[in-house]
Image (cartoon, rainbow, N blue to C red):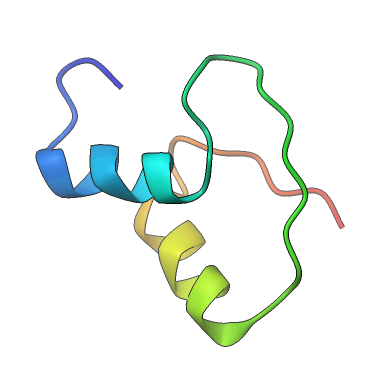
Length: 47
């Protein structure tokens, strides 16, 4: 996340993705999808 804009860093923190290769599970909600869309170039989503 070095060099990323502050809003993207805040979104990654809100998703609890603070370190590389971290895996987290979240329930699928519209607000979560919006957050993921904002940082889609930084994350990998697996259903």
